[in-house]
Amino acid sequence: MYSVIPMHVVIMGCGRVGSAIALELEAAGCSVSIIDQSREAFRRLGGSFKGETVTGIGFDRDILIEAGIERADAFAALSDGDNSNILAARVAREVFSVKNVVARIYDPARAEIYQRLGIPTVATVTWATEQVLRRLLPGGSRGEWRDPSGKVALLEVSVHQSWLGHPISEVEARTNARVAFLTRLGDAFIPDDHTVLQEGDLLHVMAHDEDIDSVTATMNAEVN
Image (cartoon, rainbow, N blue to C red; front, side, top):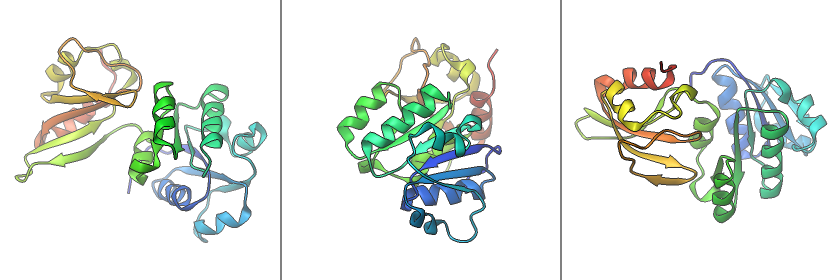
């Protein structure tokens, strides 16, 4: 289970993934509103769900407002339609200025295109609940690999906005970690000392087990 700062999240699509994400977020302490065109879909949430359910089209502005998009910290478009998901994600980001937005895309080629346009996407061929949660809930780090001895780990680390424009060499100097690679606009590459962090970068670092907490804290904090 994720442990997060309380926030409001709007989800479009109450299918198997959308309902699972909604329940996970609520269990983590978030307030959740979930939108679906079918009232029957909300049965997947069970009787314990305390969030708001809104019946309607998820990219309709009035429906989004009813779901609390104006105060939302994050939005996930998880319906079964690529066009609807992209449209809803763009409305959430461009009209309502929601900071953390992710869209589920069935066509990997289209997912890559929209990723390059700055719309975070997850293609179904690589779909995982954790991937969505990771993009909705920035902050902290996620373990990707650990050596058999448990002493060294590869982490995907969130980066505070103030780090943007700072070079990789500074990251390594301040964290005692080594940057293994960056994922930028859907493409992974090995940076050099002169590479600077940009909006949307996913930072992957190698760190000793005892340094994980300090690395995470440093990268999540405002840099002077």
